[in-house]
Amino acid sequence: MHLHTATTLNCKGRLLDLSRPLVMGILNTTPDSFYDGGRFVDKDGAMWRVEQMLEEGATIIDIGGMSSRPGATLISADEELRRVMPIVEAVVAAFPQAIFSIDTVRARVARAAVEAGVHIVNDISAGRFDEDLLPTVAELGVPYVLMHMQGTPADMQRQPQYEDVVVEILDFLIGHLGHLRALGVRDVIVDPGFGFGKTIVHNYQLLKNLAALRILGCPVLVGLSRKRMICQVLGVSPREALNGTTALHMVALQQGASILRVHDVAQAMEVVQLWEAMQQA
Image (cartoon, rainbow, N blue to C red; front, side, top):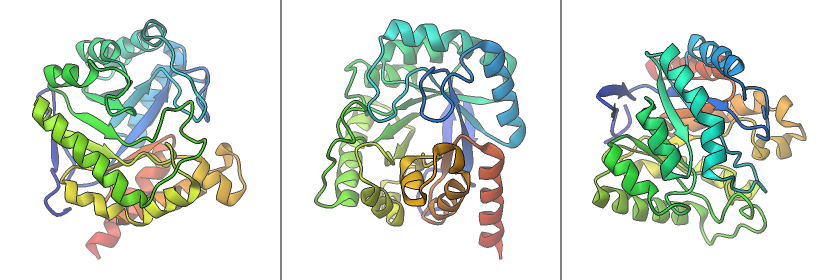
């Protein structure tokens, strides 16, 4: 068990046990995501995908209606609601045993999703794009994923700069955690934001020192799956980046990650199993 890290999250009255690492499966309802854009935008495709990920061992399904790939622009809240809500309503009804999170930067979308049965709000913006989001999360009483990003998806990869990437991300997370606690948000998961306003070197410095985030006392979520930090080093496309993803997932678990956010659930579950075998040896 990780030192002093919260090991349960209250998901609307259901306790989520984080004493062992969990896998969060990605469900993109976007036409333009970098890896699986357009594949699960209709209800049937989404239902099939959720069922598959749950069978493979995912504990949380993260539903997003807006791409945050580098260069992406924000869509309207109306468009985001139009994309995600029919799918949210369908999968929540079909899979009552699953824990769902909504990947959004907007209060309106977060509220609609949680009222429809979603358990967690996963926000790449740390509440910076919609001033109503954090008070809304506090009012809804659900766990919140606090992520670090320099800039916005449209400009974050232009020229990211840090004096010390690990220290600056820690400072950012500590400051925002204080704000969340003041608002009354009790259950917070932190995400260092791999690929969000960071160079390849920044990303690897961060992964190498991920254990530093333990001092926050929050579970750590990592999103490494098929990202540019893998593709660029290996000279492969996102489609060919599963093996690299798996290698980095093991490093993340060794550095104290509690949740792996992934496109490929079965393979991530194998990493968790092997990591657990090593812990027990």
